[in-house]
Amino acid sequence: MTFASNIPVQARIQRHHDALVKRLSAHSSQYRDPVSTIPWESLDADSAWLPDSLVSLYGLPEYEQLRVDERTRLSQVEFVSFCELGLWLEALFIQRLSANSLHEMYRDPQGYHYQLHELREEVGHSLMFLELQQRSHLPFMTPLGERPPLARLFARYAPEGSAAFWATILIGEDVPDRMNRLIFARKDLPSAVLAITHVHMREEARHMAFARTTIQMRSQAMHSLKKKAISPVLREVFRQFLRTCFFPSEQVYAAAGLSHPRVWARRARHNPHRIALMNQCANPSRDFLRTQGFAL
Image 1 (cartoon, rainbow, N blue to C red):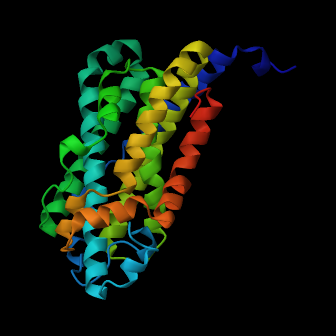
Image 2 (cartoon, rainbow, N blue to C red; image 1 turned 120 degrees about the vertical axis):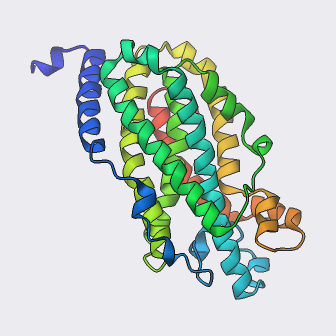
Image 3 (cartoon, rainbow, N blue to C red; image 1 turned 90 degrees about the horizontal axis):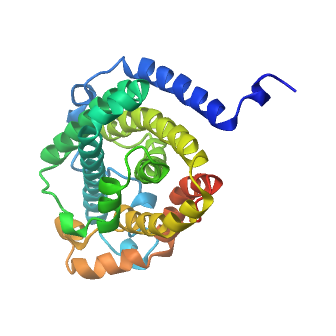
């Protein structure tokens, strides 16, 4: 039997958490403003900003009937819409962490140090997304009232530092990250699209590592009955988030210039290819949370 095996599980997880926080803070210290690093001039109005396979209507016969310029415009608008989702998520996260920062400073100084780095990076992402939106000459397309109400409430009011709170954070980071990886794999996209995606992937990788180790640490101290009680809420948060992430609002189709946008939105929601993509991106975080005792 090794010395490490005699250390209680909770203590081992705490050690791992503290070591990880130190490493993440060190990596985050080399910060650069993302807005100044993006080659914005490469955003070509005649080029797709998403690969066909990641457009919400891909796989439908009606999509194939659209003109090439209509499919191109839809890919541009959907990429901006995807970044608008990121902007909404960053705003929730910034609001919540800022509101609890003083308490966190005394409860977990190392975690507080890292979270200041994370806040700086999230603000940078928000400015990057806003710059994209302004350069694409598009308004906010998804009304705030159409964003997941339960996800918004849960992210705002779940006990700060709890496994459940960080589970919602992980869902909001990990699922879009799976999409980002699929986007970044397509090197034929405009350089600005790839740079925006890469910045987000690189920094969110640190954020997700922090969220996972925090969930592991907090869930160890959480009674199984409490996990069972909160699982239906998390399951509904997950469902609502997947809907807003993968099925654009009708305003997105209107912004792309498609007639009858409500019909297009309904078609997307029933698109087998899109549903399969959603599950592909959702399964890793769902599987991880199940290993922590949540029934999702």
